[in-house]
Length: 274
Image 1 (spheres, rainbow, N blue to C red):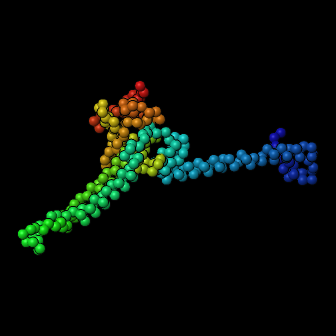
Image 2: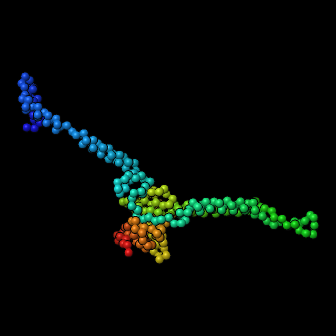
Image 3: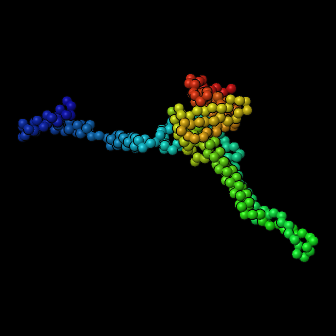
């Protein structure tokens, strides 16, 4: 007899025969078994609650624009690539590694050159010698202000252009490419460590590197002005370093397409390492 049936029998007995007494040997063990089986475990009841809370938090983060990496880590839409295996990665070239030194040198050179031009750029002036009219007196006087200002402006413009060019190269030289589903995270040397721009793979076109001397490819993104430089020398694909042609073949193979006149040819074979 089940505990629920036993409890129902006791209730019916109490209603129809309130003065009757149930047998203790039968009723007490049944009631004890009923409550011992019906009482839930505290440890089991809190686990689903914690699990539901965790899933609710994940769903909330995803709803506000979060992404999920391959290991389940929630990532912000800004493109955090830490923890994800990069498809492409390269070490910084010398001009990127020493960029701040080059920028500082450019600033010092620009300031020094401008100061010398403004204060020391003179012209020769021949005048009569008041002591001896038969002889000429040669003096060096500063050139006109418009000449010195024009040359100083040209020097300053050149220095600013060089510094801006260094920053532009830094912002357009790719250091990491991470494929995550149909999205590509493009990280450059101008980004904070582990971050980059997230775009759809179908909006990207990688091309170049076809000649024997080519040591870089270009990555074009629809809607983004300019191109990204992808260096093939000293780079690695999926953590495996290789030559220029190996890296090029690995990039095109894992990209599932080969760039041909700005279009994609689908169904390309995976890049094999020689």
